[in-house]
Image (cartoon, rainbow, N blue to C red; front, side, top):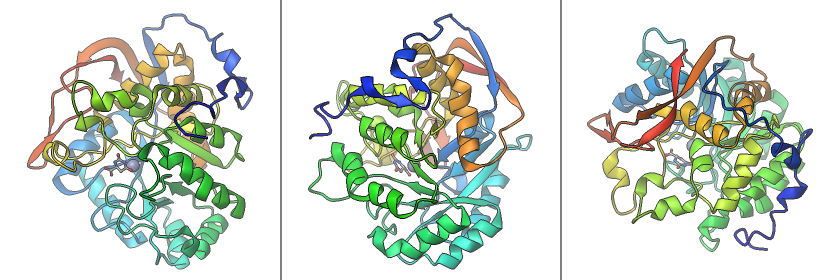
Length: 376
Ligand code: DOR
Ligand code: ZN
């Protein structure tokens, strides 16, 4: 069965919690021009470090109360002490009036010690640990070469209640790049889920119907983040009028039927699916070159992009659950008590932002977005 021929889809049979696909067609289609929701959180974010951090953290802090911060720096955040130091650097870059709270993660390696997991849990600032298969994506060279080596660490995470966040792609060069997520589920994820029944797992930035179906039918402590760019774009966007490096990310965009499957999951109301932008800034020159970096930058308009997608699907009433409730509930932290308002109002996205010594090209650069955050 191929990941791309649609045979595996069977979307009509899906059931998300108590909400079926048939119900989606009955959603209220009333036009709403303004919505107010609980301030959302971003459950998957790249903030980088140094000068670059200043630009991007202000964007996230303007829309989100909290964010799970990815640890794939150079060198990676492999200890609680490094996470604490990184958190301080983030906080010193947050605009002064903001209460933005960065939630830290540890980067797992073949040599992570189970004691480090206990230290992380006791720190109260590290909320999860990230499994990057070595070589799967940006700054993942120090990642895990064989998850079998991490048994004691995963058991410690299950025992301590520290969630495992997964970049779910195999690195086997024989596997087609568009099938890497599906094959990861078959070769690794099913085994991890079975072996550690009490371990909370987030399959990050899902991109396929296979992932959405797997998560929807897994036990309750298996969830998934969904990015705005995987909801907005299919793989045609990478080749629209020529090669479009700013649409290149990992896992790579998939075909339209997979985007549709992600959309159904996102608007389903199923609490297993929640907002994680995977906003991943790279300086312009490192993307517009041979061997350019993977990553789409969306933090400048993240909530607006999600609003646009939910609106187009007639599901604005589901945005608050996806953006502001499900992730907090999954991680077992309180929901935010503040609120944020968005209006249907076209605005032009800047062509670029300053980024350290260079420039950052955001998603929709120079074009318009349909919704705007107006008050928070
Ligand atoms: O597109 C991506 N960019 N995917 C990842 O997994 C990593 C991220 C980054 O750090 O740039
Ligand atoms: Zn990421």
